[in-house]
Length: 402
Image (cartoon, rainbow, N blue to C red; front, top):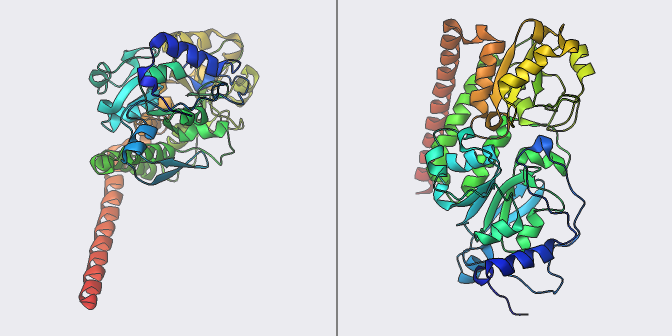
């Protein structure tokens, strides 16, 4: 059957086509927050009932492959081998941390649109000028119609960060010649995981850099985060007393919090704390007030997200009678973290350091700084020596070959 380009289809007709494709699939717009997302009923097949083979617009994987601009890049994404045969040209991102990752890598010129961001003010000020030049698709959510409308050839999102069964999925996108990448932290929604770490964010950054063929240009930026991460781990090494930390995302009758597989859990752990609901095998689950009281957190981490302000959340907790004797409430120990810091993104290490300074201020005095610097210098000297030895070995080998 003959292929045709969706780029030439009129918007009204495109809407009808997409509606037909998604009929009965329970398509929902993304709310931009893993904590508040619920998967819809599974959609078994989102292809056209007419059987028409649909190719993507000019610039999609299908179009570029036809022109001969191909490569053989394969990455493991949520346990699956995913092929990226071309460098994408028109990407769409969903959610704040994901969009910040993309901008952090300097890829704004490849961004055809973004979704899942309630306000530009929530984005890191360093990235706001770049984002102003990009179409905001948030009002309609991450939908197939939106993606086809901007001729996207790549989507960076995550499970319950835009991807959901019954809505937009990597499998459905692939049928339209649109490649995708799923956030590593979010893979717990579709497969078992051993844990979560800030290293997951670094992995995502490196994978996106590879997909867009900008590894050389972005390596220094990613290494800077790795250096900060190494320094913080050195400072926090050997921490014996780990204060219990309760993350409060929202909810009055039932609190939404972070479980064992949320990035905020990795931040708490790196900062030398103990996540209060680490026994829940999820990333953004609902907890209960009885356990908050029984487990008596020493600190409360406020996720500054949604229509309720961080201060309003703090006031609510202070006024809740059953929490009156909780350690964190009695001693007024609150720490506010933004949504972009609490979810995977380039600000994770910075957020962990700020929290660590509150939980373990003794690790950040002048003496501690000097000790950490000495350790880092020793490591750098060892690395330099190793590099020199490797170079000498290579030179000897080259001489022997000649």
